[in-house]
Image (tube, rainbow, N blue to C red):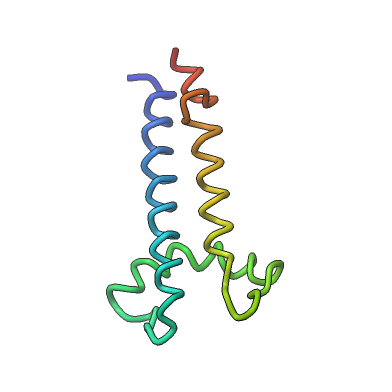
Length: 95
């Protein structure tokens, strides 16, 4: 197992998990009464909040809707495709 293969697998898991957490974060925005500092929800909010806070300064809520999680889903999906997709940089280094 080469270092590139390990990096490929690790990035795949990390980026996939972050996309999954941000999708859950999008669903949680539909329920504003949910306390994000309580147990099942803080598992989702703790890793995503450091990305969302600076993004909210740049992109304020539009019409009361926070679109920053949607932006981050797009960013992480793009990174995943560029790095480990079918024509990704790490995938090309393996073959």
